Length: 441
Image 1 (cartoon, helix red, strand yellow):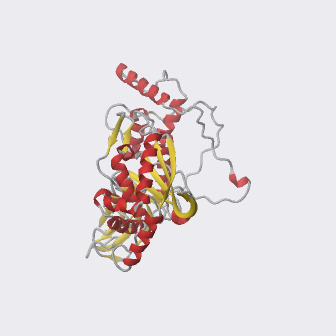
Image 2: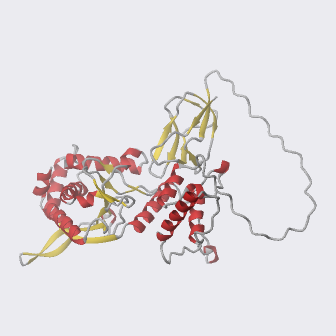
């Protein structure tokens, strides 16, 4: 019998939620046929069968979470006899011991942290979380199976140590280790947020019926990233409007001319991406990332624009790579392809990585403007609203023009308001004149 384990789904992905089984126990399946759909915190993927054979067992129900390395399914190869599972015999019932008075309550000692010697069993995501919070994982008391340190263990350690004086030592340390642990504690205490006190949720059922849904997969990842972004990056927003009357006339003419041909899905977003790419070359601060540990600004010499996409399961950001080397028609085709596959849950994990700048477009849904959250660790995001006809003054006359609202949210640690004003002004200029964008192409 062959046991198929959940394979590596990509860098930083350690688990997935079962969305759909394509087979049932007892069915025959061929190699490379769809076996199961799994949704990670980045995208939904269909995992094919690694072998041909008969399905003996499927491990997990729809909605269950499975980790990389867990057995997904068991196969019986051709000609292989599979024994029936042994019957489980219930152990004999043992009468309970006579009731005795409970012992007096005493303080319960916390779980013992792991020895400082030897490797510490913990998932990569748990280790990364500990590093990001300046926590020595060897000091964390494990509660997982086999002495494994879990993510909740690290979070509990952070809350507990924030309330303890650094003089309390829970593990016997050598002098140098003791100094290092104290330094780490001091660094952590210094990074605590004053007055932050997250209180437990009230009992909402006391006011009426409620429905609960676990925060899973993409929705959970969005929550983590947004909290990280809003806490770490001091957000500033710069707003402006672009007169896209001429650009819209040109776009509609070309779209009609190309009906049934490449370019028939020519959207305004494709022109915005090209204009943003041109602006990033002139303002590299908005195409960068800030490394807070090395205290360095990392300027990227490539241009990969992410497009925030509503999938119904949560917001994901497919990335169009090398937009400086693509024409507007190629960008338009990429938008159509990526957005469709993202909504269908068929996006590849590699197509969600490597972004340098993000655009979120709420125009098709309505709304005059928005202040978006930065897609950390990028340093800026452009929000575009709905194109509307507005009366404006041109050469002393009131005329009706098509106006596109723009909002640039940026990390004030990396760029200043004057930088944002220049960047958005250049963006407005390029969007107001289609000829300037054609020169960029």
